[in-house]
Image (cartoon, rainbow, N blue to C red; front, top):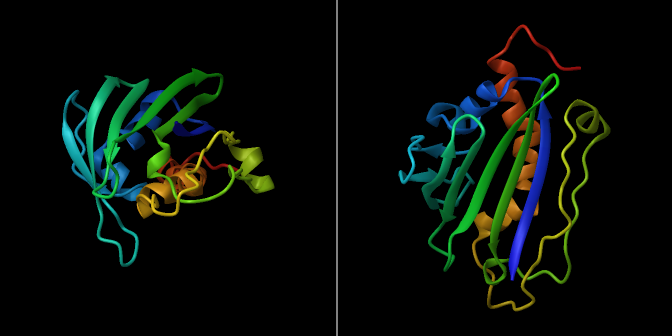
Length: 181
């Protein structure tokens, strides 16, 4: 069975600008992790974890690339058997871009929790760029299958934080004349 995190966020920028933040090595390093990403189909790259005390490398490969609208890559660290898949879709809408993120992984790589989780946003975040979090995140009930600490952090709210705050900060810093209230 799969675990799936689905997030949506609105950014008041064209897809090309949001694309640069999700498909550019230096921009990714500012809000996600150090990496050697290149936007080329089949390119193998790594993310380097920045969690204190955790020197983890995430091995990835670009699986789909349709600039500036869609990007998908595999995501696998040393503690999981099968790669998960991260898919980004950028949809042009009035006034900006609707970003859809899906991170899909296998149940046996999940941390042992007894029920799905649901994330909430602050009122300010809901007004500036609402994120919809799927409640269809499944977790293993077998303690021996703790899986990857790093992967589990992303399935347990880190993606939401990154899209809600860190990616937004990068986009704002690249557009100093546009401020969000």
